[in-house]
Figure (cartoon, one colour):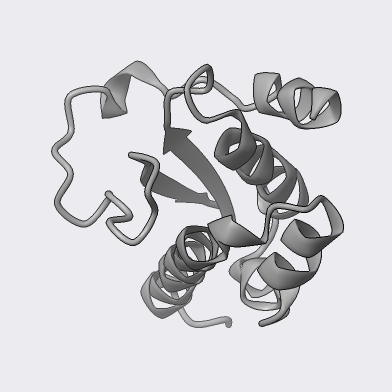
Length: 125
């Protein structure tokens, strides 16, 4: 559990520009933990942010920190390449399988952002 808390503390703070944005399209209602996800695209690379209370939800924050560490500032294809069994494998290995539904919804939301970024990208010359 100490390792999860350490990862949770590494989660990048939510930029001020997102603090007052409503939940529509950003909240992940399937997750028991209140969490909103935001993405930005720059030079063909995605960067994700999460609005989550790290103190109240260190497990989900740690999961986000780990995933963001792998996909932030990478092309959308990196996010889309997250395996379908990723959540189940990770959560069972740390004994937290009960969080699967919400965390799978988070990964699905990140992948939706990645698909949208790919559709919005200008065609390659």
